[in-house]
Amino acid sequence: MRASSPDPHSFLPLHPLELRVLLILAEGTAHGYSVVKEIEARERHLPRVYPANLYRRIRDLLRKGLLEDAEAPDRPDIDARRRYFRITELGQAVLRAEVARMKGLLSEAKTATLLLERLRARP
Image 1: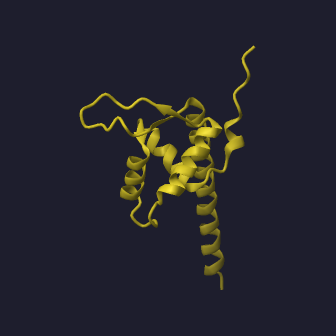
Image 2: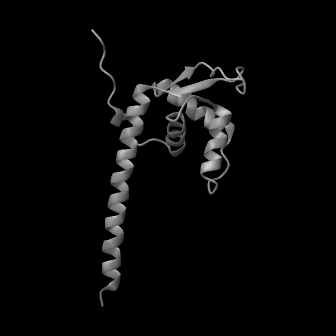
Image 3: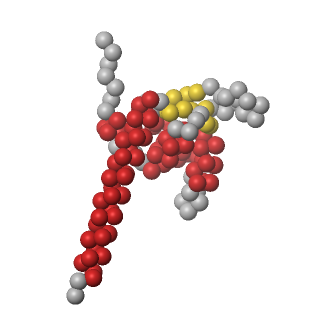
C-alpha cells in the first residue's frame, strides 16, 4: 500500500528564503550559487543572501522532500562539479499552496487599506 502524500498546507507558511528558492527551482534545475545570484538579481532591495543561510534552507527543503538532488544539465557551459537541485512534485504543491495563501493575504491587506482610508476620511 502506498503511503499518502503529506498535506502541502502542513508546510506553510514558508520562510521567505525557502519560497524564493522554490520559485527559482520551479523554473528548472540549478545549483546553489546560481540560486543566490538569481535571488539577488530579482530582488535588489533585499540584503545579501549569505551562502550558509541559503544552504541551510536548501538542506531543510531536501529533508522535507520539497527538493531533490538532480543531475547537472548536459551543456558545455555547465560545471558538473556543482551540486544541482530540482523541485519535487510535493515541492510544487507546497509552492502552489503558499502562493494561494499569499494571494489571500494580499487581498485582505487591500481590503484593510480601503477600510483604513475610509476611516481616515471621516470627519
